[in-house]
Image 1 (cartoon, rainbow, N blue to C red):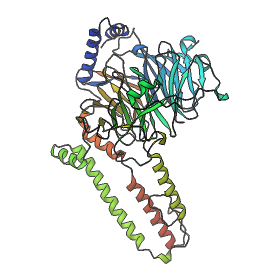
Image 2: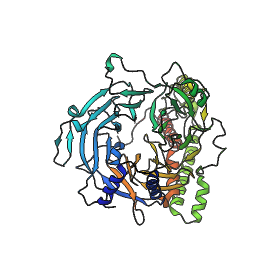
Image 3: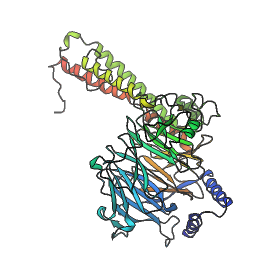
Image 4: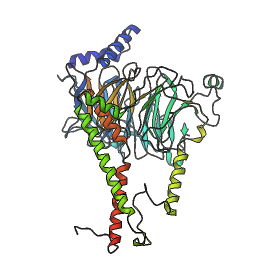
Length: 567
């Protein structure tokens, strides 16, 4: 696609269609472009001289797709626009840099509708708003215009007491929502000034007793929003307080003592295989912009779940409809199938894992046998306290007390906010798996004009794309050298922006011929490796502990002191 074609699409798609048929025609072509597959990396934004100098945590399209906003660990905002004078197929260049003044990583950046204002949230607990188009900047030697914090910032809000994580814009240049780890969701109105230090901040829309990390809203149902975080549940809140209509829709009256009412919870029947009770965490959520009722939740150390606010809150809601689940990975079954098919990579990876497990088991047996042969009288009365807690002495009252506290804490947190324990819970329609979501906080998203696809990043540097209706894995694409965290689709072009730990932003689009960055042919091996990576390394921790006890025992048999053989 050359720049002239891009310009044509920009002009035709920036204005509203004359007839619904025109809109349907564009959506059908965009949907078909994604359905055909063949996405490939077409552009990398940023390099050593131009671009971010840290992880890119935030991506968002603005001004109808003409601008891509990025931000991250270097606390700068960069605006990428199409250079209409360029002959490149995707001529995005950085034309503006804003120094935010945040003192910690920027997690999200959004341009407010009908304006040039950009709101940011960061780890310093602040919300900042900038307007560079009304500020005086200075050109850099690389061609961009740079704007200082003093020149561009128009508002600094300190309403949150925890790290602020996400922004949701509303249909206004003055209103937007933010969520933070202090467990609150706040609405900010730039038309109403206030001083945060005097405790005059407006009451939060939501306040729960655990950390929140994600917030989502659909433009079709702006009175609903979903929040989630350090809890096994996502929560749907309704901002309307028209009692009669509220009761008819949700079967319960609005909460008169709150600004909003929690009307539904989103849950699961069981925890993920590698999740610990009381440590469940939802890292990302998204409400569908095409229908306003579908909700995605991404669980750390588990998978992605699809819900609908229209489903009845019944335990059988997941099994009562035709399943679109991806079948769970059966490692042994996959091994036998792939060995028969000649998949040497998967077979070798699995065999190595099995060999390592067998060696670990034999090593543990040998060490335990050696420890059991020790004479109890040879041990001093006061033993060194073990460094690890998996196999600590149950007779130690301090250890027993700590274990009991941990168990109590896990049990207390496993039910979420107790105030909403009686709120009806919706079970998922579908489950999408294959990614590894352990190392970082990953977002989740829909893709396509009708939200036909579900996309998410992974700890292995790939991003996954599933068909929403069937649950079929559509593609796996390499998007980062380490971890992919954010995926944002262009509003009307078959163009996807991806970022993560790398200091660059990658653009993906359909291309003729085979995709250089598709890894779909290695899907089984990738998914099995991700499943193995998500598994807690208990055997390794146990081995370290046994080695420690063995060294301790050998030292006690000598002069009672640990010595280094290389000193």
